[in-house]
Image (cartoon, rainbow, N blue to C red):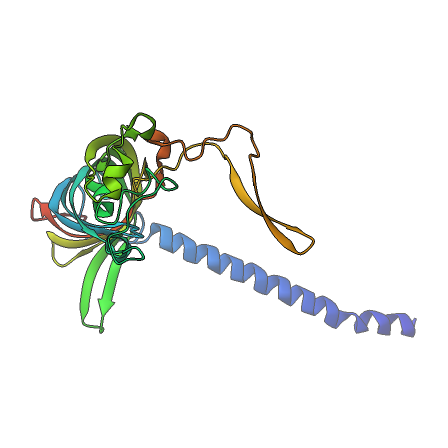
Length: 321
């Protein structure tokens, strides 16, 4: 009897600790619930996440000059001068149009080919093996393509906005946006021709240095997309920076790129002796096909970096409560 009573007393601390833990948990939960009720029913109940927010875009018309440069240029630098106009339906959605006119300048590669000489120091000229792709060093700058203009309608989504600080003293409001649209691209390309009927000109004329090359203007559809950032220096003037792509197909070098694999030269080693042999893997290959036409075009991403100034009207933005 004495042993059993002692056993019951020995278990009492365990029950006391369990009861204490349960009471602390209960009162702690009740205290948390009470705090939540105060928060929901207090003066902050129903308040917006941000008060007095400046809505730089909502129901405002923005317009301004734009300046750009295309990236990864093989034959021609493209300096873009243009303008952008946009109406912002909300603070996160805008509809607009952007247009560019392009000034061209030859790249180092184009200048190098245009100044190339043959073995005797005269201008390099085409031969039967590279005609009509090559029209001579004095014609090369004229045969490469040129981007002339771009006109795009687009929709802009603005998922990001905030503030940027410099040196802990200069603060500017910024937003980030993505855009997607479509329009037309205008470019100049070497005039299409067929060398089989001397449509590209007499080879002997170009070999004598008297041949010339012409270009035609083409208008083609394109899509355009990218991303950008706008920094607002005050309530109505901002600076925007964009990365834009507007892919399309063209014949950038004005060369003959189309045709099926034809006769090729290979080296065969037979008893340590080098033998040149000619063979046709397909039997009826026609590369190059002797034409300058649409089939010679390849895709160009037409990447560009744009920087511009935007003026927002009306000059005073909407400010939330």
